[in-house]
Length: 137
Image (cartoon, rainbow, N blue to C red; front, side, top):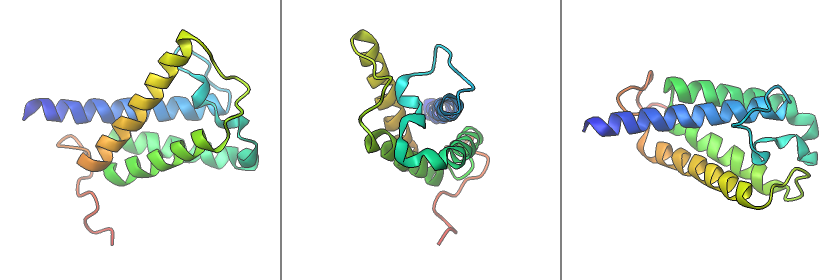
């Protein structure tokens, strides 16, 4: 099915771009129209000393997702990492309320749902390295 190829490619690019924006927003290098309050993990005080390794890990996940390298493994790892960071500290100082909060919630939900779909389905035909979980264990 031709549409499936484009859907997985679009999901990979969307998730990779969102992770890259998360990484750049956390270090303060990007504050554009696509940055939301849930993407800035600098407020998580428990991970303050891990900011640089987390940003590097998110950037590596983003690049690997965009290229389609071990998409299932990277999507699952990114989903776990972002979910833990979002749920770890609810006291974000830059919390948004009103209509903007609905947009941010939809973006975060769409992002995590896309990662879940990529975890189940894989990178598709356009993936650079295919094979999923084969040969890993």
